[in-house]
Length: 200
Image 1 (cartoon, one colour):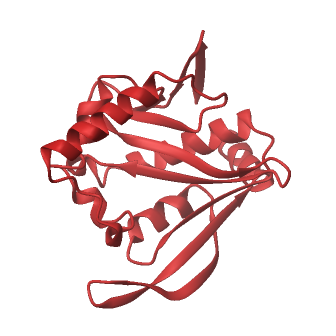
Image 2 (tube, one colour):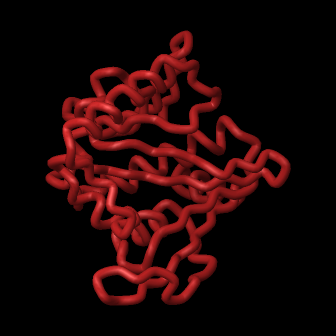
């Protein structure tokens, strides 16, 4: 992982992907992910129904994104765009519920270009993001959560070193079936142990 900070710009470069600050050019791709390329929404809390249908709503979201881009970015970042090296924008990563007192945060990942699923990019992206957060924040633990129907996300988290810590059984109803809420966690010492083993 190579982290570059040029002035106010953050870039985390892996072998196949880059995590970077969002740009104005990203907005049209993000709007496409809510109007045309929406398969990712079937896995990221699909019961919430985030697809945009009216031109007025699309324009309102575009303006809101432009306004957010005009604001100063926090340091360290709470969200970075994900770009395939030599390829398209793929999605984004974020962290939330940051508690500096308890030294914990939660992470999320959305890779929206379905034609590039199944290539291990999600695992690389999540590992880069975890590394960035452990480097930039005095964290003891990083958590993530999903639902039992999102088996790809669970596998991705486990590959990055997360441990399944618990399930809230049948908390979500979707497509006529009840699904579990799955909680996973990763401690700093576990992450550092994995990195040391890889370097050995």
